[in-house]
Image (cartoon, rainbow, N blue to C red; front, side, top):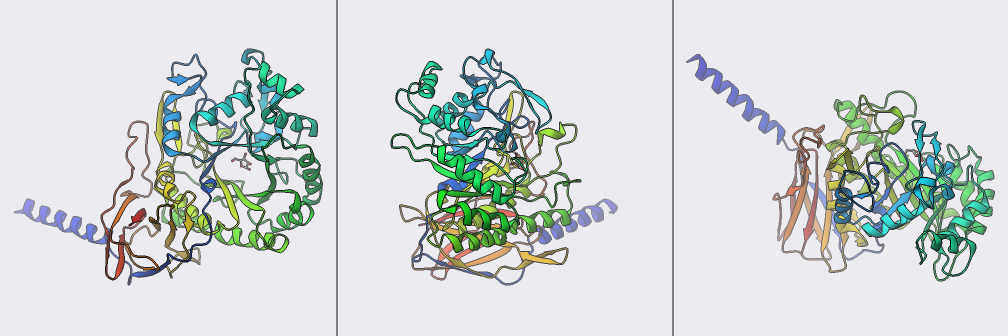
Amino acid sequence: MKKNIALILVATVLSLSAVFAQKQSGSPVNVVINADLGQYTISKHIYGQFSEHLGRCIYEGIWVGENSPIPNTKGYRNDVVEALKKLGIPNLRWPGGCFADEYHWMDGIGPRDKRPKMINTNWGGVVEDNSFGTHEFLNFCELIGTEPYISANVGSGSVEEMAKWVEYMNFDGESPMANLRKQNGREKPWNVKYFGVGNESWGCGGNMSPEFYSDLYRRYNTYARNYGNNRLYRIASGASDYDYNWTDILMRKAGSQMDGLSLHYYTCKGWSGSKGSATKFDNTEYLTTIAKSLEIDEVITKHCTIMDKYDPSKRVGLMVDEWGTWFDVEPGTNPGFLYQQNTMRDAIVAGMSLNILNSHCDRVKMANIAQIINVLQSLILTDKEKMLVTPTYHIFSMYKVHHDATLLPISFTSPQLEVNNKKFPAVSVSASKDKNGAIHLSLVNADPMNAIEIQCNLRGAAASAVTGQILTSSDLATHNTFDKPNEITPAIFKDAKVDKNGLTVKLPAKSVVVLELK
Ligand code: AHR
């Protein structure tokens, strides 16, 4: 009898918790999608990546060398190449970050065993043997089918060094640098387009004032020559977060000589002290991270407003070439390597941030999450011969449908979440129409507890079928491990239907859903 009562109690608790988990917040959220009012293209480059000589990003993450027991093709690890080819990343920034302003490219060419070594002073003080240099990077980009984005050394390099690098990579003909490239085994130039002139020049890139850097930018930029038909897309080192003065001065003094101006934005509150664990966090920490990640919307808007003042035709792109979550390093790992795990919380941040970046695609022409492998909000993690893809990888994969699609204007009022007396939306939506006329919606429900029903009015288009994918997990801290690499993977989403009233979606708590409407 006692046993039966206990069983009944357990069953009741379980069913109550199931009801609780599926609890729905309030009335449906009405979303209007203006399917006939699309104006701007979501550049695929918003889905760009960043690789830095930092921790195990390059060495072990991408490059293991030809003699490694880890299966590789010409030194690049096969599992990573395969995962990145599958993802179709549009561009890859290299070699930094802070590392870029201490990097001397000539140390990274020629026979590997003769390349000089250096100390990576920014990241752990480890020895950098320069075995991964210009050829290794640019050939890697060709291998995985992505556009390189080079970040040149302004902080500790010279104009001559930078000018020669461009000549080395891009000149097709007889010249000292082109001949040197050929001597090193590469006949044809790589025709690099995306070219950053310095990184964080207000900080690790030289601690400059905006006035000083603007002049320096103009000088360096003058000697970054265009060769043949290749036109460099020149990106000036931009502001961090809320430094609107930097953007103002750069645009005023050098705006006419740049194609892009960068912006860096991370979710951590400050640079010193603990940033919290990547995998062990409470509800308040979760909501604080989400609130901070959503603030990028306002930050971008404010930088754009300044850019509009000097460049109303929006010729200069805002390049958010570093963004993402930044937590404490995994216990027991080198503090200088910035290695962190990646959970469902990161997936929510990625989904919401990409929706915001899409929404600014009239001005935002590129974004690069930091960093692609083994550092900060990575898409891939490795442990020697093992590799896994993170929840953030899955978001980038699900969101591929937005690449180069037309942004569709939407309007809705989201239910609010609250932390530290700050209210912010629980729901984030982005819609686009691709070249074949298919409409895609990416929807995020950041509410950790409540499902939310979405009622969509598809204005200016008709749809008769909907399919979709969902990424969610029972716990926000769920992550893939080397022992269980598929703890969190996308699944087919069945809770969306289209009928005469439009589209109805039941978004579970803490989920990211991508739908295709036809
Ligand atoms: O992503 C880590 C570092 O953060 C980069 O090297 C630097 O540009 C930024 O401060």
